[in-house]
Image (cartoon, rainbow over all chains, first blue to last red; front, side):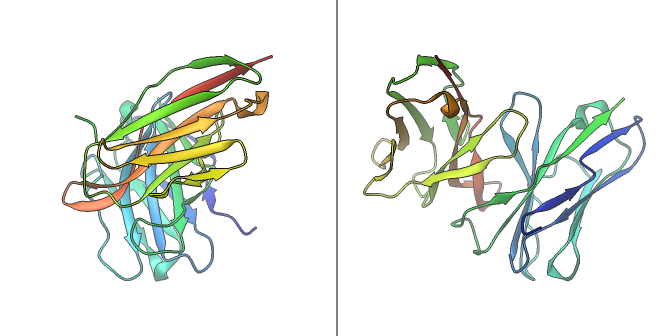
Length: 115
Length: 112
């Protein structure tokens, strides 16, 4: 499809396991964001990629979280040694404009449940 | 103080009512402002950008007040389908860089 694609849509894991969440942005979009949304809460910024620039990692909550974007397209968010407080919906968004002036197109999210 | 603050609501209004939401932001250097809509268990989607001169899109009107650092969203003739959470989004400065910062959202319930 033409939209932002995320996988898996749902992931249940045990505390202490590692998980990988994938985001396939809209083709040609140079900006890619990861946000986290806990139940009933707003969106928490995690990380921002813009073209070939160094990513803005200032929102990552701990060193258990990391993300990469290969070839300026697909991105993977990795959470190591998951904790119960990591349970949330992880949303990826892409934008055609640099910086923070453009419309964000969101994927449907990956719902992570840590038991 | 949060970068972007919204009244969480819920605002419970009858069909046909006019309802307004405000959102305040803390960084006076913010340049871009948006309203997004999020339906229950769905991803956010852009409702409208907010321009300095204010803008209108059908039943929706957005205003920016830089002096008081708030933006507003007015919905006229509310429809049942307007029930959703409305997220205020600001280009704000946080942790040494500019990024799009989302408010926690205002929940709107339109009843028959």
